Image (tube, rainbow over all chains, first blue to last red):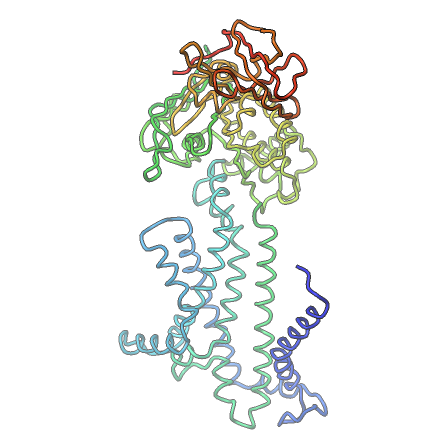
Length: 268
Length: 324
């Protein structure tokens, strides 16, 4: 497609404005975490790493980080196991209700978090008589983490087709050997990308977490929310926010790289 | 044929939903022959091949491989190997690992399998490519790797599922000759599936023509071409003129009909008018409106003829064939 010079400049400046709206505030958060002024006077007169040191020493922050990592890893592990299994079932076998299952698996990603949160809270505390804690947070997060892994895995399985597995069996490998030597290595980068994204989603989730965590557990986003309006905590909140920004970029970047690799080198 | 039978197929049937893809097929395949399953798409040839390989289970019937019924065995328990249409090379392994794969999963030790894989690589003339990934190879090279990967296992039968379909014409013609030579050299039975009649005629010891899940005819390329047993075969393999003459329906190939201004060159002749002459490279197709009321095609002119001129078409009765 060719577009006129004017149109190209117009599009590029629109894109620039769009990106600026998203990334300038985020950059300010990161810069402010080094701002000497406790009230974030702008522009910063001088820079300091004092807030970072304080944040690292803060036991509340460390607790919260621990819970976030634990919840993220557990939810991702569950999502990898169930999401991959579901993707295999849906892509390799035809059975009654297959399309509906596929829809039901993907649905939670578009459900409002507040609905999922309240529904899960109700189910856990009223119907099942469980007390909210890490387990309930993990289950809550797994509901949408599964979607990410499932989508990644099923896209790769569809593109792989069945002929690689057939070739492997034809050459004398049974089902288990074929899975180990052929299917899994070709699926691995998709699963890794899905796992990273799932962890990223879990790590900054706040709504479902609010309803499933209960009083004992504070994840990082919840800690930020709870400390947001305490003026003397503001610099530390800012540091935590900056950390979340940076930590979110890494998995997204990696998973994008992995997806690109697989589109060029997957099948021919 | 005095050669021993390696595969005996009896009453083989397979349906997909309402469609009878393969319908009561009986077929004997002899040791060391190059046999081609030929037919249009959906004629059942590929399904027969996939049932021999073990990717599809028959609804009924048996497949005896070396005297033993393998029709219910999984692919990894059958002494056959397949060259796939899309090659199905393992993208995460290099060429030599692809070729070694069959030996590796069967537990052949490392130095032995490396030596055999290198030998197979040599057989398909790809020395020096062992550490390339499949994505770094051309279509023809992938084809050769797929061949080596199958042949290194020394199967009693090699199955080839339209393996030349993705190659361009020049390379395809070259591979046809190479495949035939390779088959002679290794002496393994090749079962080759194609919809390309020229390919079938070029390469095969015998051709099995499929249509609607059934076998229409089995024979050598010459038998199939010179003496087709059904109008389907006569039209699918080569070209034919359907002519009604002296109350009989006969068929004649265009190359056996001589078109000339007035002389007859055979013991059968028909008058006509040259409607068009179409140049198709090696030959020219002469379309003649005959006095019998139909269009007869000849590719065998005896002199220069202008369009619109009156011509005589002639051929030998011995070149005619009847179709029930």
